[in-house]
Length: 413
Image (cartoon, rainbow, N blue to C red):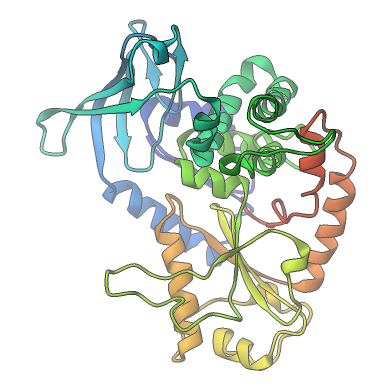
């Protein structure tokens, strides 16, 4: 069952969200609904809900080789007493996380471990089918090799799903502390067993997980896990909780650490489709204030919405080509709409925006902001961020990133 809550009032999504979670449906939420701004979002999401690939009456089980066992599942589903995962509907926008527990030293006995995922489901034509995926991976007791092969996106996805799953029972303070503790423990193990003669006080990060402290900070600032009740309503928290339970690994990373693209300096290939059918995106920039140029224009993607950031000194020719307006006043940015005009810059920027939207499970509304608005929000966020108290090794890593633009997307929900 899908629920599309587009309203400015209270909807009790804490209860309605459970219906979506148990039935395999999608929860969509927009506060302060405006027809001109959100009608297309509602249309696109309803259309995707009825056209995306989906399986019905699905039953899933994960099996492991000797020495491993399934410890827990995280996601949107029903769990039976026998340990099977039941989903009345399983579609292409749903992702599950499975936690495995090591019961024996398998590295001393064999070179490979196997994990098998079996899914019994009903296809659209009514036939009952079984899909089986078996993965054999090399095992090792070399900690350096384990860190070298670690996948940051998968780790962040797992940490986010576990945090929002445990929050109702353990409380937000406990799961937030667990996120920090897990990150600190990972960095501590790497420093203790992998680093060579580290200097006292020096922060040592594994190459594959060097952004883990930053992503952890992004999760802590997410409205699904924040303890600041002044900036989040119950409906918002319930929606974001359901969303984190279903996001894929790559989408969770974008939610924790948004992508920033410079649109004023596109190369000839950016925004164009190559011979193999792939559209070329501009390189993603780090989310620091130093990357913002008042003469430029940027696109910020947090997975939920899009922000078109315009500097106060952006060339009038760029504004004319992209938005078909001659001049941009201080309060005009919020009223701008992005359409495809008959020029190369406009076509390529629209292609980039549509490509990003097509890769997301929910339609992203685009809002335009001017430089002065973002700078005011940045100063506020800096003051709030610097007051946060972090512990242990993580403290230095997180404080170095307090100037990031993670939470600066207004009207995301």
